[in-house]
Image (cartoon, rainbow, N blue to C red; front, side):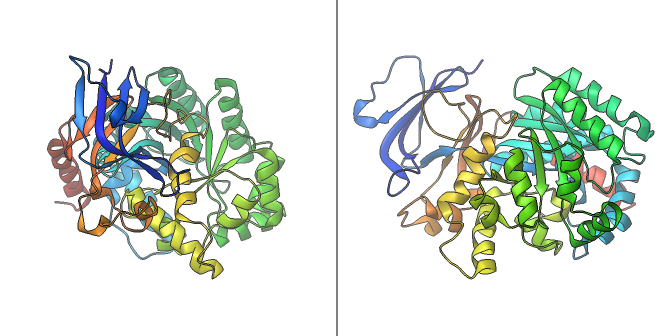
Length: 434
């Protein structure tokens, strides 16, 4: 159980205020929730309560990474500057077949958790194989996670017989349903790697277990063309024809959408997770975020895995997202900083299974971070817009998840990061044949 903590002498994130924050405030945490938010002039310290002095830093909601393949930290920088299909079929899939193991998923997911915590992420949606090991790593690190077991129609790590893919996912959900900080889920890789039967069975499992369903959707032109030839329609229309789109379905990437696709997503209530840096690096294209937002489709932000990004810093992702859509539309006023902050905090936190995090308010989950504003690149700090255009993950000084101090003064307190890095370096030597 988390103890009562009060953060004092802080700027408090308040995106509705003109500058996006209020001055000289305090925030109290207890029992995993925010119990008080106010001005320092109204703060009266009580004995035996833990005080943390923000020293003028900004208290803001923890960031929500709505799509990641955490264990792929092992493949960071292994196969850069390649098209998606070449990258997947000639490098990533063979590497996964050779090197993905329970040990690899555990340690590499723990390394990803360290990177995310140290850059201000308090919730992650992960999607991979041997997801049991990823969930263990997330629990030990203290990060909140939606952990999705991967489903695919060919032999995969931990699922050598594709006929068992739904059973493996069902067993995973059964073991992790109701656990603190972990929401189990299913990740169907894509419409081109899963049959219609598999997709429908995976979604049926999610509906019966009341857990989220994730899928890569319309990521590349090749996928668009493939499904148009095979099913005479777009990937989005294909998923709709299988009755897969509803408010508990979260579609990832969704670059190649037309107006009919966007209308379908809006009418069904499905959400989108955009991963701009991954899409840029793989030259997959630019998701129509402005059109999605205009249609009322919920849009959250993700990094994707380290093999295609190559880092998990959501501050960098926010900056890329805002600027990419400005230049794509030749309009500097669209996808503004506050909108991107919303995508990376409360919008992500309100997705199914994500815990309802994302604001600094009484009664909300105590998932918050402190930004050290005493940095040259954050001086002067006129508004929270600078969080998008100037801040970086290295400016995060402390992290609180479910009311627990997970990082303080840049030191992770929940596990041994050096040990984790050493174990991943050992695994990397195997990849290199050393």
